[in-house]
Each structure stands twice: as C-alpha cells, then as structure tokens.
Length: 407
Image: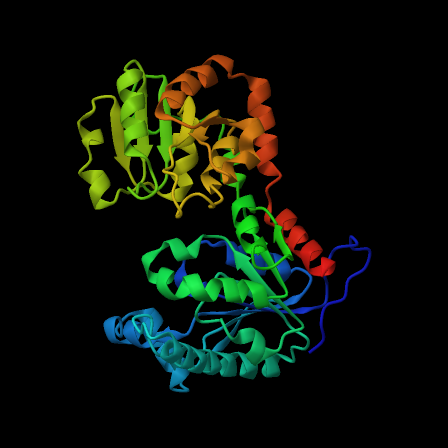
C-alpha cells in the first residue's frame, strides 16, 4: 500500500503519514467523540488505524450476550476479521485479545506487571494490523487512555507518541488510585501532549514542556442554521423571558443552588431545563419551584429549537476537579445560535470571556442574566455565531499538526 501524497498544502499540514489512534471509546459505541472526529480529519490527508479498546474480562462476564461483546468474541475466536475498512484511508481494529480487569489490584508492583501484560496483548493485535496495512513510522495518538495504552510507546516504538488530554480523568473514582501515579508518567514520556482546554494544557505542562492547547472542534451545522422556526410544543405555554439549560443534569457537575437562587430572585422569568437527570437531581428541591420547568431528554436534532426558544442560556457549573478543566461544548452550541450566555467562571471559560457573561457567585448570575437581556442585539448575535463557527475540527487538527512539527 502507498501513502497519500499532497501538494500546495499549508506549511504545518502533515500528509502521507500513518496514524494509530488508541483510546477509551470504541468506534462502534455509537455516540460522537472528539477522537472519532480527529480520526476523520487525520484521514483526509493520511492513513489512520482507529483501535477499539480491548475486551476486558469483567465486561465479558457481565455482558456476554450483548452484540458488541459477541462481535469481539467472534474476532478473538477467529470467526471474523478484526480489521475493518470504514472509508478510504481509515480502518477500525477490533483487538483479538481479552485483557484482565485489574483496577482493584492495589499493590502497585503487581498491578504494573499485570498491566504490562495487558498492554503487550493489545500491542500484539495492533502490530498485526499495522503489518497487514503496511504502516511505517507511525504517529501514535492516545486519547486519554491512561491504563490500557500506558506501555504502547515502548511496545509499538512509534516515530512520534502523542497524549491527548480532554478530561481531567483522575478526578473520577475509577481512574484516581492508579491514575494519579500513571498519568503524570505517561504525559512525561510522550513526545508531546495536546489538550482541548487551557487548564488541561497547563496540567500537562507540569510534566512535559511540549504540551499545547489545540482547542476543541464542534459540529455546529444544526445549530448555526437554527434561527427562526416553530417553538417546541412543550414550550408554547411557558411565557418569557425564558432562561434555559440543555444537557445532562448531574449533581457533581451542575450547581443546584445557583438554579434555585436565580428562580427565586427572578420570579418573573421561567427557567427551562432540557436533558436527563441523575437520581439526586430528580430528588432536588428544584422540582418544587414553580418557575422551573424540567422538559426531559430530547433527540439531538431537536435541541437547536429549544436553545432558539431561550432568551438567555445558562451553564451553572459546579467548580470541582471534574469540571474545572473541561471544554464546555454546549457553550459553542449556544453561541452558534447567537444566544447570550451566562456561565460559571472557570479557567476553561476564559477562552469564551469576550462573548459570554461569566459569574463567580449565584448573585452574579441574577445580575448578569438581567444585563444579558438588556444588552442583547442582532450585532452581538452575529459576533457570537461567527466566534463559535471558527471552532472546527479542521482548525483543531491544524493545531495538532503544528504541535507535532514543533518537536
């Protein structure tokens, strides 16, 4: 097989290379992810192998009858090919191995031995696929996989190894114990690190000076074309001004007290919350406040109509280790429609400071919502939409190419 060649490309563009992408999210998981979008963008000018995470023992025992597990077993048992073509120059690999579930092993030397064995099995599957494809001098791109891909730099010997940080993983219980030790080591030994927020780039830079914020790409077409149109039927009876939030409602991510305070201090406004709730959110006092309306989860294609029906959009984050560094993609979705946004001030939100209203307290929310309503106009709508529209996967990947070329 021959690699792509390209002419008259920008100076930082990388073409004709072979990328191997590993990470936490399998291609067949059925939901969008940063890594899938990056893979698609890489494959426009390079060859790309997107590797699913290996089937682990606990998943096999708990979910053996699930179609996705059966598919992996068929590959492991030699009944189906693990290497699948997705489109020209983009392949997906189902690894032909089962790895052991070892996260509960707390003796670190033993854990390290077992994890290296898991990595070795995983690497053998990848080697077999890259040999079949004729990949050479690979660029290894690791999407936040701290454990399953920890030893791949040593085992695959890539020309360049990249660690991609898009979440502060070690704040989560599953990742915390071993991740607090292993992630800094993985960052340090990678040739470079890229992140989708200033906070995460700064975190990586503590361990590796070659760490860069490459921004976040978003798929915004359905949002940028959402102005006008009919109001959703379940919002017709809700009088304005409407202040709204769209997204998952989790008590470790959203500040219930901010929402309650806004509703109680702006009783002439209605707060509309669209999305699924965790159990604590369902039991919260917000459900007893008359001017707060829970409309439940909606299909993604319907979300622009809801956002378009809000006068002001909210992102009332709790500030904690889980949220502080995350790039808030919903802000781009709000701004793409041109809506004024009031959000909790975090380091990641400084990127949006020129086009949003950033609150440090629940009292700030009340004042800034009123200010946002008073100042809103068509010129600001256009500026917000143009700003959001610049956050494309093409631009984010260009920044990754720049980072690779800088080492």
